Length: 253
Image (cartoon, rainbow, N blue to C red; front, top):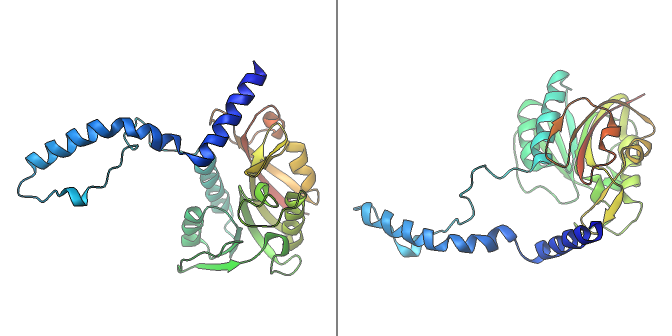
């Protein structure tokens, strides 16, 4: 049974690389779309509802809004942690740009990404840089975040060079620039350790802690395989998960 479920999961991952299942299934909504368009057009006079202006959104009719539990909870977690003790300025490496836009409204933020950010905003400085060679002096940054990023380093997904040790090197570089007494807010996939080439790596919590051996863990939260968020728990709770999100608050001794 386990072999069969693994094959099904593998097939789903490969199909999703070429087809968006949500959009494929949305074709079934076409009859309702045409009926709704005709009914609206018939009742909207004198408002213009031209066929040339139609813009079908076929996959949005659902009971719940689309939600990525990892990104939803990690953004909330980071904002709460920063609000507890706001730094004079904050540096983020490669996290969700939507989250960084919000952080920069409260705290001056430097955003570092392998791919340059094509937007400008007060309170936000964008730098294009390689995570394996950060343009900062050793022990110069007081506050850092890096959410759902280092698991990708070295897998070539974003045009970076292939490197089996990419995540470990990224952890070492992040630790290098963090000041003594500085804080790192980190999230990575945790659970049964493996590489899902070329999407990401999944780490056991022990591996994650060993990669940041020079830092001290002060807090751990997680989102489990069912999307349940647990605040302030033992990292060992994630050991048997397949693809959980582990959120680590580290301080440099």
